[in-house]
Length: 250
Image (tube, rainbow, N blue to C red):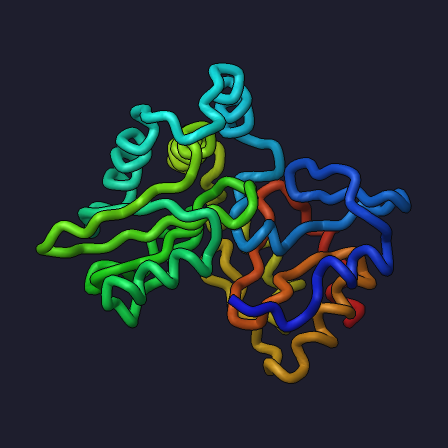
């Protein structure tokens, strides 16, 4: 997914470098708190630092699973993916979104669904899907696909990361991270002019041509939205309606 705007340049120019992140908030060197509606393309949808994935990563690294040593991590990841996405038989994990797309191209699949965290997606009639995991570590990306013939998949993701991704998927099944429709509806008066909402996913009503200016307007009001027109923003799980009141000024 190509970005319409340079997120890093925009954020650092206005507010300096990011120092830390917690739940749905990003804190910068200039003492500014941004409300995060980008959530790293949905990978931080459970909240920055929330859930058990970070602890799982630390525990695995402590056991020296930082390299490509053989382990059961891939089998455990496949097990939870099969539970969440039963329409697919095979799964592969990649370090970035582009590698996932290249893999699908390599095996001759041209059309696929994109499934974001906490959303099952429209994949019942699809032969493949790219799944965005609820784990904000780089651009780790899952490919799900069906094939009658065995397709070799070389997994170059270390076991420690696979273990953390697995834990993140299990966390996503917890009621703690499943906001109700009533809880989400309280934001509709602020977002309705700019996005169409599907649960937590927000699809822009703004034209692609005007989207970079809209991104900048939101950022000036300390709200970070998706830098990519074709990728949704997200209603952050931990936000309150006051965090988004700046949208009423646009």
